Length: 413
Image (cartoon, rainbow, N blue to C red; front, side, top):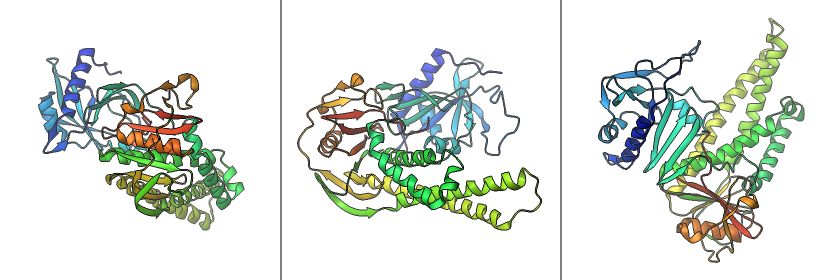
């Protein structure tokens, strides 16, 4: 049984209410919430045969609440969008109402923010999320259908972290070195038993960078991260120099423990469980358990590093890192005054020449313009700028041009 799609008029009304609610505050706090379009008469038309413990459920309000800006602003505080959603549908009089709340959305939010390896099933047909002032996003499951950000419509993201191109090329050598180091630690034989380990290590490294940028984005203050090709401070004055190298080491240990845990599990299954052996060496089971515990600990360590680095953006200035994701300082001031001779907007992650569009850097704010100058001056650098409204742009020098990518994809949606 399929849920009936909302009429265009209903969708327009939901989006209008969400947009104007995003401009309001409640008790001096910004309105952030998710609306799930869920049939109030049949909220769960196709439940799975086996329902996992943390699957979503719904709770009804005693009386449905008319969906308007005033009511949404008030009710939005009752359900944190990181863990739940408000259920919206038409009542018997064809009036849009908030009829209940959806729980257990924390795993979905964690997956979208790249903090979990898998996400849960999404409730209802559509999700409308207020993610910032004037920012409304529409999802079907985990697919972004469209977004309104500060009066600008977006229908997709620039996947420069995942797709081959100039930005990804800047990280290539560091990721390659990480893969070689992990392979040497676990042993070539163990590393090659699964053919995806190199890709998995690369994916997790790029996902971690995305998580740092998401953390900066969540603060709503705006910020900038500059990844330099070396540890020189050419063109920079760093107000708070530090040497924070823990993240790279945590990523390395996490990869090692993950591979060791999986290898022990594979041996247990293939050598003993599949052959119905009654006796299994206790040391093999111990290897699995210990590696699994170490994997969990280092996963938490990576999360702590990510949040610490993102928090540095609360101080005005650039966070300066090298290509191994080691932080060299924050509160950085860019001193380069010379403008790039050519600034272009990319049309694809590869920065294909045929899809470049010449732009005037003066149309951007001072944070973007200073990042453009340093990235052009220091070839091999990558700059990421998070605006106060949440937009994320990446930039680097390619030949004699400074290329900018808009709407950088950070979430797995």
